[in-house]
Length: 408
Image (cartoon, rainbow, N blue to C red; front, side, top):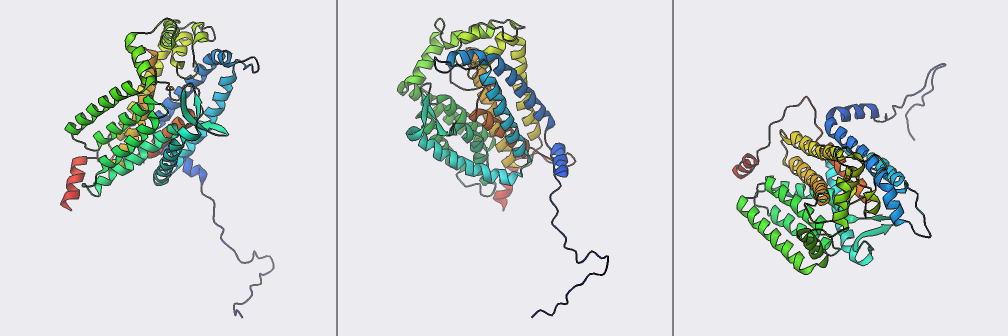
């Protein structure tokens, strides 16, 4: 039996106190988050999303009319309201991701990369086809694994490439190169040449920053050109799009209609919902939404959209100038290369300066998987570039870091 005396409180006393575990101070966490994130980057992203909301509202009638059937008549703002719902969910993902610790995000994205790579393997077998490409798997809603693989890819590869700081002899570039090769093969099986080019380009950016010699970079670029030639010779989809690009558009094909739509409104635009060319434009709410912006809002607004993308890229690069951790430099560079690369490929397609790729305009085009994945990408960028504004850092020097490791 226990000999501990029974405590009997005095009259009017409160008895024995048990100190409860207090919940975390959420307000304090939010204040720290607001102080440490790049508020300029967040502002540019929110402005871009607002422009995207207006653009989808402008493009929604064209796509709704085109996709309506005798059985289903889609309302004019069908895609607009759906886009607003996806954006609301995307903003929740963005903010939640940016609040999480870097270590947790690193581990989570590595698991996500493995899961998305597995799903990419399943796409040829259980995926479903849209517009001639099998890229989606249905889990109640359509999910495009390659979209979520993009941010997970950048963070995972940054983690692998940063191993060289522990052991400079590790073949990290070879390991990541082999993984990129697997991803490219799986993407070409869909086929998805645009995403394959994007993944390869982002990987090249990361290995250049990781210290790959220029001679090897030249060899890799030569291999990339050879791979494009092979794709041209073996994939009908790629050959047709490249031939169409170099041969010039025919009257009223996708590229020609996009050009007519883009320039139809002049500098100031024809006015909201007054565009006529957009009504004949396929995929007005996704692939060719930049042209819809040009027709209804004007080329000046198109220029503002381009400036917003450049501002987002520049803010991330400025944030990395005095960064002293290799993993953060590589991860942020890979993420912004994927984001900016996709944006400018889409814009160049609309300007007839690049073959059509079926690629959305990040944070502007309508999309489910793409919107959530791009918001997750921005959330990762905000999270990994968070910093205490009162701390001073020394810029990272790759050569110096490797020399220190060799000395050990």
